[in-house]
Amino acid sequence: METVTNVTSAVFGDAFRAHERFLWGLCYRLTGSAADADDLVQETFVRAMERPPARTEGLRPWLVRVAMNLGRDLLRRRKRRAYIGPWLPAPIATDDEEALPAYEPELEGHLTSEGRYDLLESVSFAFVLALEALTPQQRAVLLRRDVFDYSVEETADALGLSVPNVKTTHHRARARMRAYDGQRCRPTQALQERTREVLGQFVASLVNGDVAAIESMLADSVRAVSDGAGEYFAARKVIIGPQRVARFHYKISRRRLATARFAVRMINGLPALVGEFGDVLPGQPPRIVLRCDIDEHGKITALHSIVASRKLTAIRFSA
Image (cartoon, rainbow, N blue to C red; front, side, top):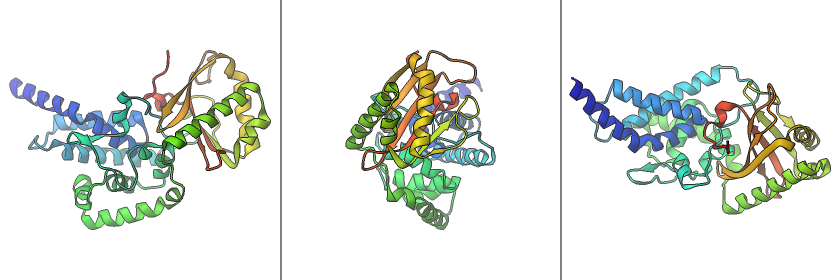
């Protein structure tokens, strides 16, 4: 019995190494949470060890089905729970070779084919936030069909659905994505460069205490969203409008910029600020990821501040 157990462990140990990153990429897109993706991948392999499939050949489809089912259950539970303040996706680094598997999973030794949405776009904040309007099943179907370019039949098999159900669910999911499709966020090199420039100007204006300059950079419909998950002091409502957003960030900068250390990193396909604070007081976050979205005129349309500890598990900080 011990020999059989050891063989089984070795087989699934190899499978874990072979499929972990692919499954993580799926689970992150499905949940928008790096910590949840970690948990889902671990739980998937626990299931494989406890109740292994009859055949280990072609194991990936079986693992995907388990992971997606677990992910859909997690999303249903999350929708039932009250969340303190606005919800934002967990940021992930996309600035080096080690980060690539986070958003470009491989299939049978080569990069997966891309569907309606390319692989980097599908981890952008704009895309993941748009997915929040979908039901868990719609989200799973859309990712399989429009990101990883699986056929209807392959999607049905992976999710345990009928082919007609997949087609209907996919149609409804696409209908809910129309607003996003009208102003898609493709993290092109040009957009990355413009975002980096705007972000630098924004920080310079904060350092100089130039509120008027900050306001001039903001679109009329700008929204500032802070995700502290009730763990730290953070705005529990979305702040809207150039004056209110500028004042909000100016006040925070006056209190905390003096001891802060920031670096510009590629986060979810676009430049963002990754920062640590030296003056950590009770209730104040020690770390932050600050990112922005811009429009075609270079105006900031959204500022996202992510400070909740569980949301920052995939980000490397200097200390």
